[in-house]
Image 1 (cartoon, rainbow, N blue to C red):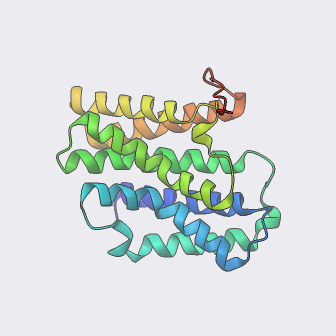
Image 2: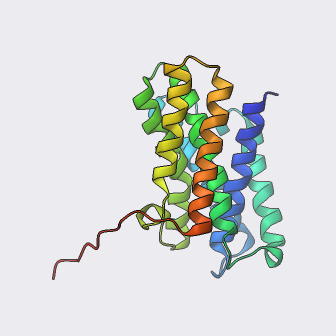
Image 3: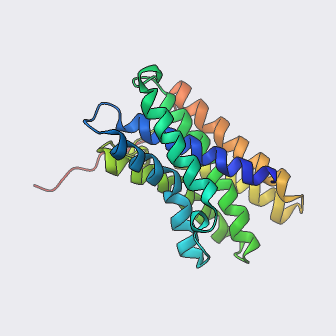
Length: 205
């Protein structure tokens, strides 16, 4: 069992837990909460594999589905101890985004995609699960908020592309730099509420 595989399971657990946190405050039962957790955990990776035309990862490896469901149950039962009103949801999302996005970049390049296409695939994979989670729970998605969200992913994957595709360094090093840079940048944005300039779009009357 290699390190990237374990990190994939870690990302799955982080996203599943974020799904439970997002569902807190709604009138949802255990089954519904676990469904949200599982969809959040596997959503981005499923979209990635469908676009790439490869077997969907959780259909041929039951560990990911088991990890997502188990994390969902444990998080739901222990929800009273989770910080529903703090930034735990955002930090778990940042961890999941960093690991899934960097992993998607590697998988895409291994399938022959050029770095630019692999970067786009990494962004789609990273934000896919969170978008589904926020849609299911009726939350405003982070993607349309002024807070730095997609930018850290793009910057981190850009560094990853530079290290692997331009400098020719090992894939593991590129993955580590990409994932860590995304996680650190996103965490700083959460901690200090860093934002991009926002434009107010008025609805037509």
